Length: 314
Ligand code: SF4
Ligand code: SF4
Image (tube, rainbow, N blue to C red; front, side, top):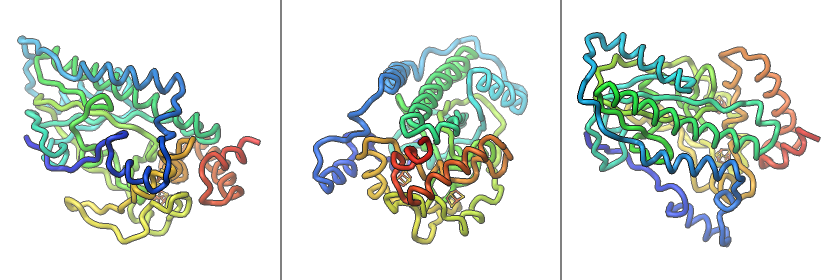
């Protein structure tokens, strides 16, 4: 199946990144320059796992007579391997990067949560959560793909060390949740504080359905992400509809000066979203959320993260 979705080049080869660099008149990208030892180690592990995305198949294939039962088994294995959320969708061309040819028809989606309590500990703590989650994404998808191949079925892992899957359409179809105004998928248990990875396969597996629980209606009158974004990058215009799904456009060009060209990690649009506690009723997260939002209010709603963290921890 050949993919049809355009994707943005990541890292320094991203033309938009280069354009913003010129606009700002700077020589370096602080987000890439300032790497903690932990972040560097995570990135190294992820790169190494990129070499193990695929591998030989066991010629002794396990028969699948009941796709529903096998889907439950595979989800259980993924959770045992470290995934916090698992859903399955039928693969479609819009879920694949343009021009990539995947010989598979099913995508197993996994989510790995970030500890929300990190938001009051500062930008470095939030960044450590993100890269820790990315590493778990890579480790678990690699291990799950190997398990499938061990059962005689194709299994190709997709993570930051190599990925042909477009995250949002796959996660949406697999029932992870709805698209919020900030452009990330919102799940009732983890809000948007999670990172995804995937395994594509031809193993016959029952698929999940999209999960609609009122997020987009709530977004219409919320605007906390819009009002807290230091770059005014979050959805100020009317949403558009893609493949029948409403989505708001976030300006990457306006986002980059804050998410790439400052010393600290941003992530503010996700951290201010009330869905971190709204549906799941997690009292600890609600308390942290209120503490964080008070610090944001005191620092000025659109203050970059480092100013707010100072207020939250003094
Ligand atoms: S902060 Fe509010 S408007 Fe933004 S995504 Fe979350 S619920 Fe929607
Ligand atoms: S990461 Fe920061 S700058 Fe980018 S959209 Fe979110 S809040 Fe705005």
